[in-house]
Image 1 (cartoon, rainbow, N blue to C red):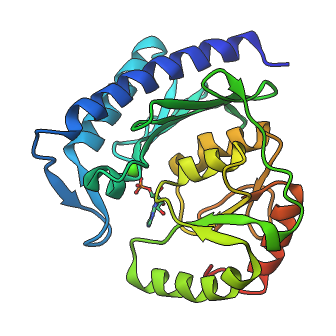
Image 2: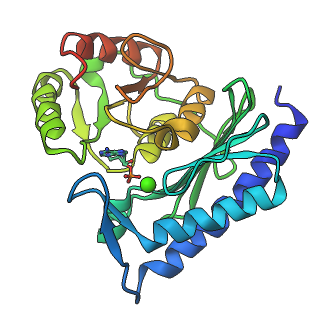
Image 3: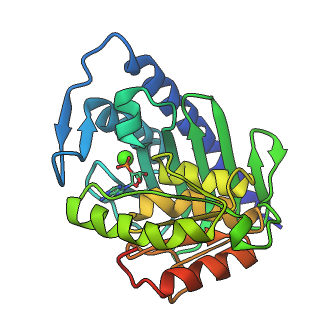
Length: 265
Ligand code: 2AM
Ligand code: CA
């Protein structure tokens, strides 16, 4: 059973997500995107990422000034209450190119670290994935569930690659061990949507190294509430080292395969 206060958080997240997505759509065309780079020459950030985070932060903290905020593009605000974990544009490279896989990701965490609400808006398609703790996962207003694929050899598995050259080459090596063991591989370019696609049964498994909490916070709750499992190699929590996800069987088989390859996956 979802706590009634959780629905208020979901409602606020939905309003912020919708406004953010609208801003991103309006900003995508007819404007200079003003691209800068961050950790490497391929790690881009645009003015739209920064503006959108500003819009979300203002809406969330305007409504709930006591809350904290952890976002990709601005200084952290700490709090003993709810903390909002936000990626204003997940899939920035796709956004810049107009490749239609980029999202707004918003999660609400309580002080114990439990995620109460997860919301991911697929900006291009206008789809909204969301979940509340104990309340199930939804795509728009339809309940979603992970697939029941029961063998890794039959699994469609998604992954992603780092902005860092050396890490990316190591990831490609790991992939040579994975690709022969699965149905096929997908690389869409937005971690939050990879997790949502898994939650909706659009893929059966997912793994990626180097993600940040704002990439996986909302998607992790959406996968779990859709009946799936998210963890890392040696823990039941996703981490920056690696995030692995699937239904119970695919998660276990994928993690075993990745364990034989070490943490450079
Ligand atoms: P971003 O678009 O917000 O940067 C790409 O595989 C996915 O991983 C995207 O969701 C991307 O988020 C995320 N990501 C986060 N940190 C990354 C990093 N250091 N290198 C590559 N992708 C990263
Ligand atoms: Ca981002």
